[in-house]
Amino acid sequence: MKKIFLYAILCLSFTQLKAQQGVVFKIKYLPNHNYTMAINIGMKLDATMSGDTSLINKLKTQGITQPVAVDLKMAMNGNMKSGSVGADNTFPLNMDFKIADLSVSANGKQAPIPPSISEKDIKVVAHVSQDGKFTIDSAAGKKANDTTQKKMQKMMDLVQKQIQFPEKPLKPGDSFTQSMPMNMPMNMPGGSGNNDIKIDAGVTYKLISISDGKAYFDMVPNFSMNFKIKNTSVSVTGTGTGKMVYSIKDNYPLSKDANFTMKIKVTSEKLNVDATAAITTSYTSTIN
Image (cartoon, rainbow, N blue to C red; front, side, top):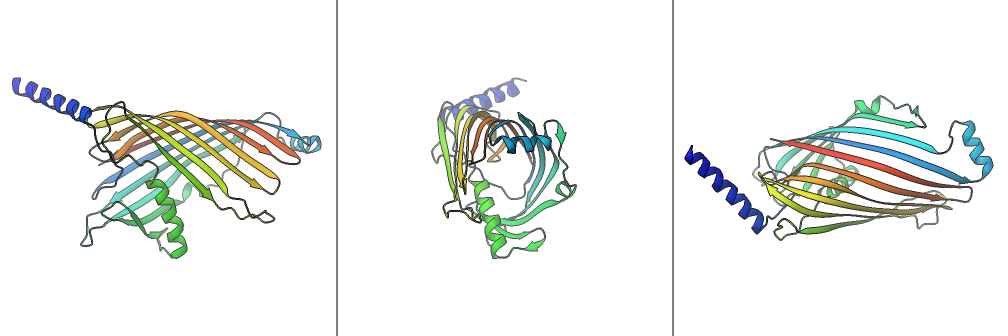
């Protein structure tokens, strides 16, 4: 019993020393691992419209009365299974994602959702190099051609860049901000040729504590998006709070939860929309 007690004290002391010295964090997939994920997103949006009275009255006849209250819920399950390292120092990664539930209602009326949305799996086969980068091999059971590969590669690059920790060790009390500005070209018929969607997203992470092989972070996300289509301008801004739990031995987040408040403004010649959206996101992962 004394030996067990002494061992526990030594482990506790080592963990506290490790936390004081700091830990170098990095998101990376490991060979021969299974990652099971559950993602839930909820949104409650309240919108008011102003402008052309005849247009607003026409919307009323279609059951769209003010204020417009939209309720969205989506659940997605995912699995990523990695294989052994091969002679080329890469290992395979099989990804399978599926929408488990999707519901949308406006002013209490449920919108019809095609069953095919929740019946279809998104399957991708890739391999991961020593530096942790993905290369897409196939999607939906078909060998990836140049166009598909480029699109999927961009998506996976965005996923990998969601959290980029500093190269230096972090200790409790330290924080860092990750900015993710993006310009997405949008070709619309009749557009002015300058219809890029400008997105400025960022998250400030603060390491709160390290214990039992896990690191606990607070998150403060910020988001803004602006674009114009013909004579219609769209502006979205938001901020929120969240928490993340990171597994040090697995180099991967075990959970992320966040609450956002979004302000949405649409202006056009005939109709203006002002909306506020409350968004909740939940992500959990089991690794073995």
